[in-house]
Length: 216
Image 1: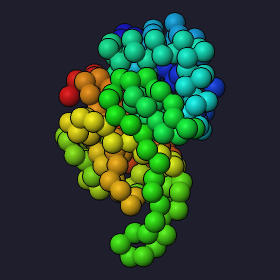
Image 2: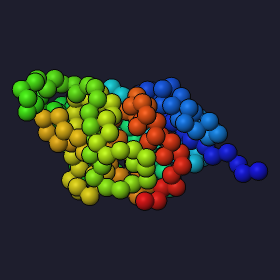
Image 3: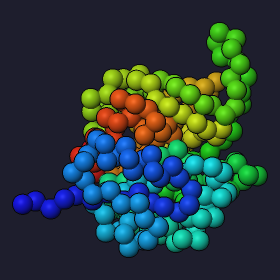
């Protein structure tokens, strides 16, 4: 009988952990899902989700205090990893939030504040960007399998990412400025949107992740 695959959700005190874990359990009831603050649990899992909500200064402080900077670096080289929202932003070099915060630097680039203003129809673009927005899939990727191009996903963020290397872009969206909705490199996939809150398309992405070998 084949062994059950395992997935760890990183718990460093800054993430929507229960909803992420429950969404994975819904789409993959045969997968062992563990929410853990122990590096050894994260490193032992077959797949890892790196979530995050709140201010990047607080997230980075907790990541460093828990030693998860080294965990993320090791996981990014060894197994499929999905980073979500501030988890995605933490992968970049630097964020303008909280008067400037150095991040993990796995991907070169900056995290910037949305300028606000108005859209093409004259409607106010309030910050934070909160609600549903379409995502253009800019590369073919296993995590987009079964998801229509320009499907809508749920976002909650005041800061946005555009990596220095545009080849990292897996999906883009627009809120007054174009921004990275998803990044991909090797066995790492990252989303600015919340798949666990994005209904059918988000659940499909999570289903794809638990099936993904880490190869594109």
